Amino acid sequence: MAASDKMLENNEEELNDGHVVHYSYYICNLNTIKSWAFEKKFTTKCSVLSTSWQFKMLFQQVPDATCSITLRRTDEVKISVMASMYVSLSRETQCSTYYSEKFEKNEMLPGQEVQKSIAEVIPNEHLSTTFFKKIDIAATIIILNCHSMIKTDLKRNLKILKKRMTISNM
Image (tube, rainbow, N blue to C red):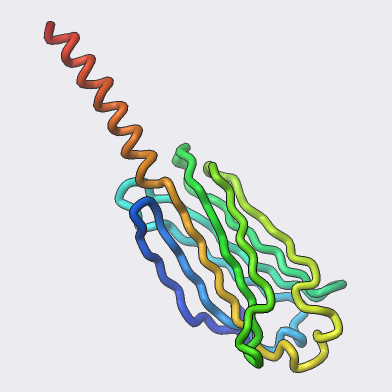
């Protein structure tokens, strides 16, 4: 993160069948910055299936103010999980969200990513004004099915193992 931004919140919460990771930060004077990048690598604190991720946001003002958002799975466990991202941008002056979007992938394996490009994330007519003096950004990442899929596989493997043991004891 650059000198013109600040992390407000970074937390992870465990759900019955997954994890929620939340980042909240702001950028000041985006109209004076040609490009700005935010990147976080994290690993879910999961006792069943811990997965690793890379989250990136890149704002660029050339030629228009655009934003690229990427969530990439970086671990090597070949079990799919569901990944969702909710991103919202709001202005300090009005405390209202002017952009929000959800994007997701139902089955995400290692090496795969979810990517979104937002054209004109800041309307060009407002780039040179104080309209966007401070932008608040909230990103929520939800990883699901990491608990139930392992439990299902374990139950199935236990049934197979019990059958084999029963057959070998006959």
